Image 1 (cartoon, rainbow, N blue to C red):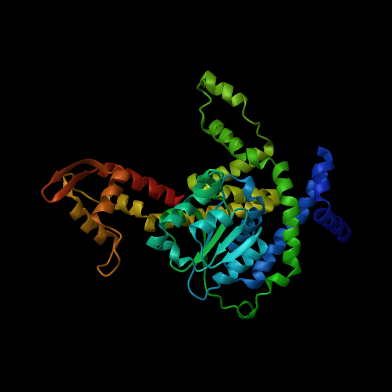
Image 2 (cartoon, rainbow, N blue to C red; image 1 turned 90 degrees about the vertical axis):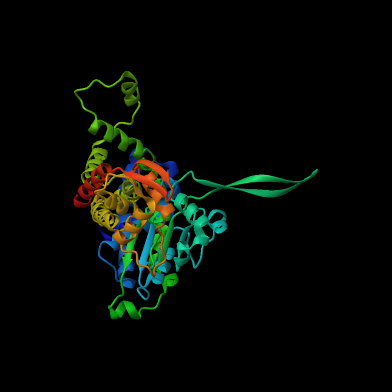
Length: 430
């Protein structure tokens, strides 16, 4: 791109966006969108260069963190947005990462602790970066964990009673707070399993790069950060509307239904009528959806990655392909970790290896399960009779149960556990 064209585009981005959105025809908008995407690509590369200057990370983390940062400016346009979790040993630079993310993200704010009231009263429309978040694992923070389990998805609200003065005395009114907000967290010891399921995890390691180790944090002085923030603030919402991000989920569902519906069967009349009202899929839609489908990312992982994929798509096809590759790689790593660390998978694995079809006591099963997962006698035990009994019931692994003098005995659904483990191992190998 010629320098003169770059300056024209830069002026358009920083000064003319409101006029652009309000006054241009569709054709003029399309012409200017192409220019804006060029500048967004420049801003994307600038953020990556800033991250590289101060941070020593795995290669795939630079585009991931950059896209997550850019997505905070579009947060309200998505129905879900993943948490970013920095898991790191002491001295690996997690505080520096959070400071840099908060400096670059939309209304970023770095805090050292988080409480329930702060989350729903003060965090809306901000990007919250929580450092030293070891306390999230404590029993006292169970209520906060429950709120965080919901705050990654739009529509989840918390309600509180507020005392108000009226002419005839005091009364109470219900206040409703939206929980949905982008959050980045960091700690050393890891995250509770349910909350971790809402996160994209970044593993930080200690750097040996002398330049990075000696650089002083001067993020608030960098003109580059001020410029990229202005670019993102002035452009992304308009582009989001232009590309129809709000209809992507409906289009995706239409794509999946058509892909997996057997064309030899005549669909019901009601289905045919509904299908006529579905949005049409463009060539660009089909190309993007087929690429996503071929990675075999699905379920919660698809829900988490889709906002980042859509964000990258607006910047450019190369960026989209890069983020899609990162998503596929990290999702595969996540599946492997679930196989080795997930409590539910451990229960399925344990039951699948049990050759006894007779009644067996929960107490004996608990003792055997502790040995199976290697829970030592000196550790704080999370496996007890009550937990294992509930897990077996929740996972539908109990064929029958009875109460006897020494407690509860159950017959296990071993065949189901075996089927599940076959499925898990197939997923792990993909």
